[in-house]
Amino acid sequence: GAGVSQTPSNKVTEKGKYVELRCDPISGHTALYWYRQSLGQGPEFLIYFQGTGAADDSGLPNDRFFAVRPEGSVSTLKIQRTERGDSAVYLCASSLIVAGGVNEQFFGPGTRLTVL
Amino acid sequence: AQSVTQLDSHVSVSEGTPVLLRCNYSSSYSPSLFWYVQHPNKGLQLLLKYTSAATLVKGINGFEAEFKKSETSFHLTKPSAHMSDAAEYFCVVSDREYGNKLVFGAGTILRVKS
Image 1 (cartoon, rainbow over the protein chains, first blue to last red):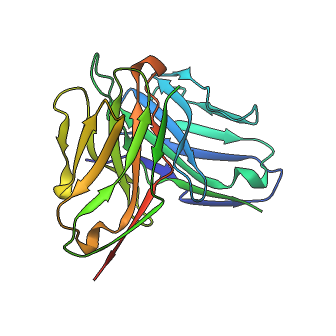
Image 2 (cartoon, each protein chain N blue to C red):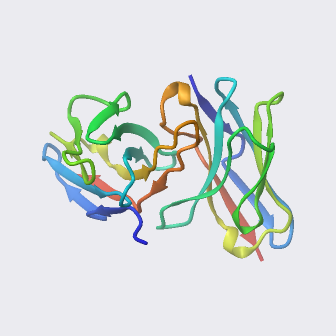
């Protein structure tokens, strides 16, 4: 079956511009996660959705970052007034929620964002 | 708070020799632990996971990891390296006390020499 997909695969923008990154989770997965992977580092958690609501947004670095998941499926990560330090690979993952179990997260290929 | 320390940023082995990638973690008394692999220009793939069942966990492609609570370690091993194992490996911790987010180590790049 289809895995997690992310579009675009690459995005180049200029400092100060607005960008949107899209994630299509695996069908039926109620949980969706965004992570950011900077060069030479492991991915860092940004935000977690359970259904349509953000259950944990503690990883968002500042108020320029915002994410939505209006129908509980596709999610969009939005970055306003981009800065060069926002350049990274943005990863999306999805999972089922298993009560009392481990929620294995399945990752998409990522969107490489470059801010010039 | 949760954290993961991968003790080696780079490991180089010869094909056919054993692989050892070291990981120490900090978490509550009941963490879940994972190893993910990332090949160049490909997405993260789960190798194996520990979920408080057997302490020796077998994963895909011949990899294993052993959970040692007394040492707070979760080292990844493979008896015989293959060229296709060359990739970056991430040790990851998750704890339901902190929600479902994954906390990644900085990664270990494995190089396999022919």
